Amino acid sequence: EIVLTQFPATLSLSPGERATLSCRASQSVGTYLAWYQHKPGLPPRLLIYGVSNRATGIPARFSGSGSGTDFTLSISSLEPEDFAVYYCQQRSNLLWTFGQGTKVEIK
Amino acid sequence: EVQLVESGGGLVQPGGSLRLSCAASGFTFSDFNMKWVRQAPGKGLEWISHISNSGKTIYYADSVKGRFTISRDNAKNTVYLQMNSLRAEDTAVYHCARQYYDSWVGFSNWFDPWGQGTLVIVSS
Image (tube, rainbow over all chains, first blue to last red; front, side, top):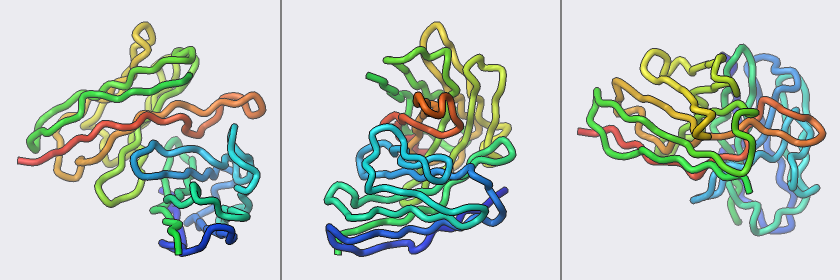
C-alpha cells in the first residue's frame, strides 16, 4: 500500500499570504494524485485532480504541481474561506489512500 | 442540484451490525461509480469501499474487508454499506461520495461531491 505523508501538519499564515503544502508518496503514483479541502461541518471538496487540474468551480489561486513521489498544493493568496484542512489522495492497485492532512490556520 | 444524503448511523455495541444508506439525487445515478469514506474522531480521511455504476466491480480497504459489504439499487438511486462485526475503531463519520465528472476529463477516479456524512459510534 502506498503511504502519503503530508507536511507540515499545521501551517499558520495570515490572509493574503501564500500557502505551500507538501505531499510525499512512499512510491511513485504517476499522475494519480488529488487534493481535497475539508472545513468543519462540511463535506470534503475536490480541489485538484491529476496533480495539476483544478476541479469545476475551484478558484485559480489554487494550483497543484509535482510528479512521481513529491507533490505540492499552492494557494497564491489566502482568502478567509481557505482556512481548512487539506488532504492529498492517491489511487493505485485498485485502492485509494489519503494523507493525514495539513491544517491551514489563521496566524 | 447534485445531492448525497447519508442515513442509518447510530450507536451500536461491539460485534453488532448497522446498514448505512446514501440517497442520491440530481444526476443519473446509474452512470456513476460510488464510494464510502470515513473519518474517525480527530483523524484523517480513510477510503473504505468502491462500487461501479453497474454494481459488478467492488473494492474494499483491508481494514473492512470481510466485515463490510457495499451494494447499490439503481432503481432507488441508493448505495448501501452493510457493516458487520463492528469494532470500536469503526467509530467514525461515514461519507458517501460520487465519482467526479467534468466535461474536460469525463468520468474520473476522484471523489466529488460528497455527502455530509452519518455518525457511527461503536461502544458498549
